[in-house]
Length: 579
DNA sequence: GTAGGGTTAG
Image (cartoon, rainbow, N blue to C red):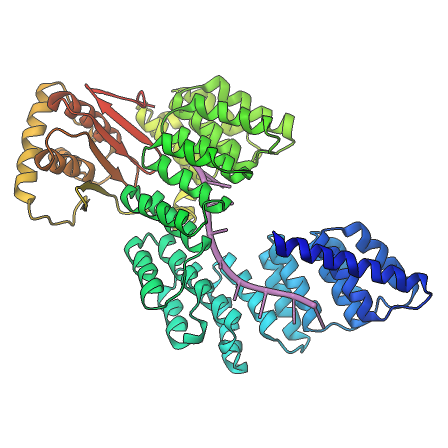
């Protein structure tokens, strides 16, 4: 805050000095020009920048290297890439600094391919790279997870001996972490101790969090404080709290929250947003609301985190109310806001309301719905059993549904017993595209597993490979539960098992889904208390039905948090209303 | 004059 203010003051002074220079009739040097142009970037004023540009043209200084580079940088940093590019192309001589401005400008505007193309062009033009250029290029590689390109940049870095530069080392660690190549990330980290600082530590942590390697993320955190003697910062905490949100690891989440307060990062919007998310995903809505209410000026992301936890907990109405609050607060919703609202409506079965929001986003906010929004509408109609309308909707779409859209539609068809014949062969033709998208990695296909916390220990159960000291007892419990729920009216639904096998084996496989194993374990080891089971993928329809019966026959409250939402089972019913 | 890490979604 103070730095920002004094910086602004400094730049106001530089404007003043520049005007006095003009009034006195002295002609400014290209360096004086460069410094006032930089002031425009800090003050975010492209208007003054444009005036300086025309003045520079008048004085014949616009072609000077320093003035030119700074003008290109000014346009790109203010987000005017078209003008930056036009000006840059006309510059008679370009150096590493002016190229860096362009590479960085493209990266900041989200066009990472253009950033890397610029880097390539620069090399082809024979301009020597420096630490600034490679850092910018590596950061574009990170965003694209372009590990191959990143490795080429890495070899250039090694050739020029730039790895000892802290920012370059950090950029390398981050590039490998984001590409999921943790081995290479660790390698850079270990080979260059001079690059071990809070930035590279945070990149490593974040890499592990993205790979769902939570324990490794936490061990880096411990190492950072103990061995590294480095203080964690807001970046470190936002990654770690996110890990807790992903895993619904409440105990660790609470401990991190305490440290966030201790280190004074509780005013950071990033950290607060993810704390709201973490508490919501652990089922503690009151805590989410409390953390949110303490945020002084919530950004649109912070605003989004609240309705999203309402939505996953099946409170679609509260999500919509929060949206109204957001609008009243004068915060402009973004594309994700509408995904959240549509999801909330879809999970609570509010079809008409959802459709209203879908049309409202374009009419009122001029936001053109993307494939993701269309997918939500497919889900909205599909879950409500309005399959024909869903199909009409798909046919009326200006683009092909994405993988989510197809999965929602096919899921709804399966649940409603609408099989291939009725769905139409054309659709199944298109469905092949889904597999392709899944192979591309834009959708994760994970092996399913469940986990349950008993005391301070987390017990994990996979569908096939798992071992547990109390395995025998758990299987006995599972068998007796199956008998009990069958007597209560449960009928196994084997339609959902895609594997080609006989029906008995299918029942067996369903019966041993990880969430049921986890519930059986919780029942034998934790009498009396409500059971909270967490699962990394969606609960299947058969398990959903089985758990309803289990809650009935054992008379216990069972909460299952899957990857999309919470299911509160009690007395043979679920809070999701089977949506 | 130019450079490095984090948040919300299906």
